[in-house]
Image 1 (spheres, one colour):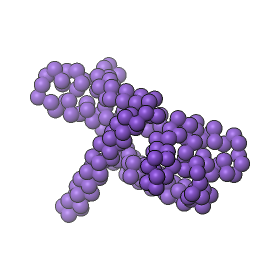
Image 2 (cartoon, rainbow, N blue to C red; image 1 turned 180 degrees about the horizontal axis):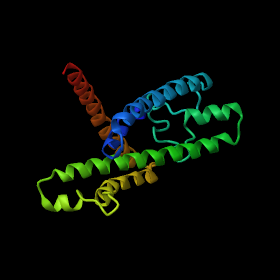
Image 3 (tube, rainbow, N blue to C red; image 1 turned 45 degrees about the vertical axis):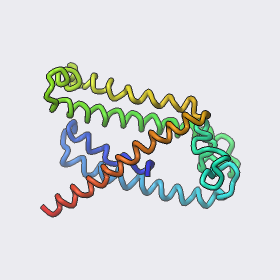
Image 4 (spheres, one colour; image 1 turned 180 degrees about the vertical axis):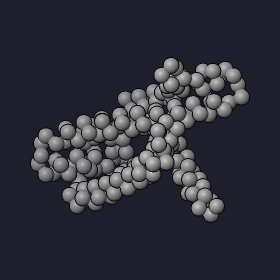
Length: 202
């Protein structure tokens, strides 16, 4: 579920797009169709190349005492994509994939910061407290909500918990944060489907 989240992010840019009615429908279709199809095709191909019982894969549902869901988080050595490349005997490609995973994580963090800061900015503008509207609900001379960006960035510091991912308490804490993110996103998708059906009904 986690991998397929984020397609709705493009709709947040409607407030800053020059022609949202023209650009957003195309971008929204692209954001859903391309990643979903890429994941499905990629998972299918990797499934053909990597044995399910490969010892480099983590199977916590079989034996919870052997390996963890976060094992290999520093090097992506547990990734089935990296294992498939290693099985193919391509020595340089695993390092390239690690760099690609890092770049993907940075772009995802940047997108999340953009969406959270703009959402917080809009909420602050409708806040009844003047102090909130004048700080978080304001922009600088370049029309950038710096205060909203700073407030949205602070929870991102929790990502540094991964530095201690080899310790059991931190593993449990990271797993809890993951569930706190995935659960509300299911509610968001359900509300989006309901809103779409009501919109189509008129």
